[in-house]
Length: 420
Image (tube, rainbow, N blue to C red; front, side):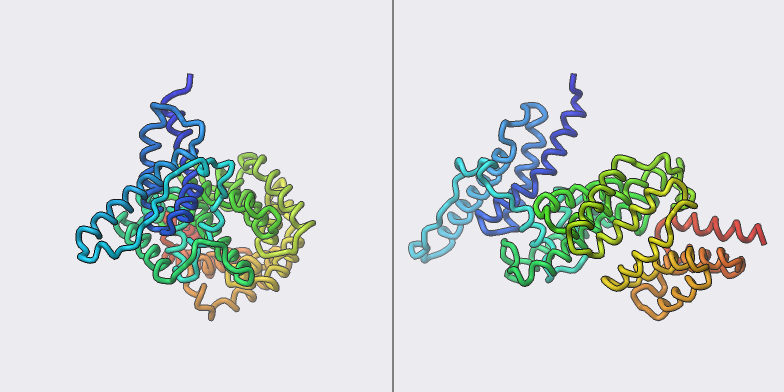
């Protein structure tokens, strides 16, 4: 017999999947993203309270669209009545056509607007944090409270951010449609970047007591799967999904029972998710053979090499180095150079890696970041400079807001102090 908790979980999963489709349909029909978003949330709340007891309707998507449409229709009628009461020239008002749900609400005949919704949430007029928040709210179906909790921000602050994002979109005159062909590639790049930001925040939380936030990584993977379904021939969409799967496959081995960080080289690889690894490897192998090579595909290929190595010593660092050289040519940035330096150190020695790291000291995008000092400390330790490594580990520990990372870096420094 199915438990109540299982039924509620099933309903929640279904509502999260349907939320962007319903919001897209309402936005397309009524023209206002902001009011459609409010109506969608009301429909989701109604379903969450009714479906566990009354059962999931035969056409859940149509049910949600119908409820949302009625909410918007009622609001239009109410607004129209208010305007007529308050406006002396009410007789001059043009007639307003009210939308009544009908057979077209059948999902078999209604188009999926998820891709349009993703492009709208990642509109270039929004800041990156606003793009992430709005994507999680509108496309991910997360509540404002859930998003605030994920990013350790007050709910009121997150509500204001989301509200301002909606206002910015309205002011910018953003249309609910796919961008013109000449803008689509650049806008898709932003969409992929936002999904990757969500994934990274879940995989390595930037602050707080937990190293990982599984709800965010799962949501990013789900959205990447949706995007892959909508754009099955795009190599970078496939590359991003493969990269997420191959990276997330190591999640259970990244921490000990008390939440302490375990570096890649020391992880128990028997705890890695082999089904995710197989799916990711198959996906990136097929994509590299068919699509033009892009940055996400190269990163996925690097992740696949790590995941397929039976032990850390078996890692093919020479092949990884070649891939990082290609990645630097395609999409050079400080993080790529940082990881490239590690590959150089593993193949050519730590001093060569440290020399590459020195090129980042003047880069404002990474100078002062704890990861730069953490990698420098690791390479100094490899080179036998115990005192230098210890000092850099301590600097890195002071610069991170992640408690697990801070504890790990402090422990590394302490171990070197004891050894000296």
